[in-house]
Image: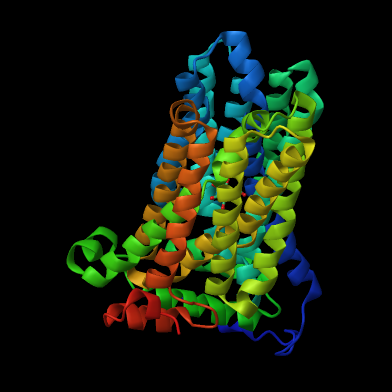
Length: 474
Ligand code: BGC
């Protein structure tokens, strides 16, 4: 193994072991926050579309089927981005992959604001989606490589938190702009931060792990020393990385010959399908439309959507604060039970017709309970568990496949919801989602492991020795 000279590590004025380097710690925080801004971009782009659909659809006389593709275009791009993220990350590094993502966000946002036809809007949304898929693959990885061990979980969850903040900000700006139907301005609001982030990402350091992978030891040491308390702890961490990197990523080969790896890949796919089939994105993309079905007027639709976005942000803190204390599974049961119940009662209200103010407000309260249930559970936790269950030698491929599955399921729901509403009616549509959430409770019981407080090594050992999926943790 190549290493930096001993002289650098044991310089006479090197700080003692146990020394807390406040500057380095602040630097880690700053780098992680800047990189997490990619989550904010994703959130802005998820959230903006719910405000754009109506005025854009009216101006260009867009059919329901095509409107679904204005939503779906982003998800096609996101699926491609998630599946190609691994290759770009390995070749260009995390920093430049993130910079490309920011560039795509910016071009896509300006392009869609300038759209002159449905086709041009869909094409620009594909570009935005590519940025989103790249970011969903790269940012959590980059954050976990920059953060100190004890902060890793929190830093990765910050990405999801910033996504929810982005969704909220977009809902909020949509609410201000919707009375004038200014859909182009709504999209410009997304474009400006994208340009700012593009500039900021250029100042991010390269990931030390990627630098070691590429054999740039001196540079890796320099970056790591800036981010850790002492140069000797930086050196030790780099050596541990180097040791881990000796496990070759076998990806597809491992998938072909190892049925245990196929089980963890299958579980990752199932988790992400369960996340998307909960129905969260029918609210994120179509909340005003659903509130319209509950007889809210346009202004109320938009402000209630902003309120829903705020609940999505606030309830994410429950997962961040309690998943390491209560465990993943109890929180998932609570979340899915509240999602199943709220969807079922909403279906009943839409069946009888929300004729009174009390029923209208109940419909809004139920949507809020649904979103809160998702944000405290499946929203962040499915990402967390997916990153915990893959064996070292197949981690990149395993996470790439589960992220791609998330995007594809998201695409499926996003491009069929309006048709479902038209064909089945709003009440039956919500019964379908209530059933998916009830089914998820059974699937969680049968297949999902409790990974709280269990090391990744233990999970891998149990997986590879054929232990049942739900017993991989405790
Ligand atoms: C999901 C997204 C969703 C977001 C809402 C994420 O965990 O993957 O599809 O839009 O949560 O906050």
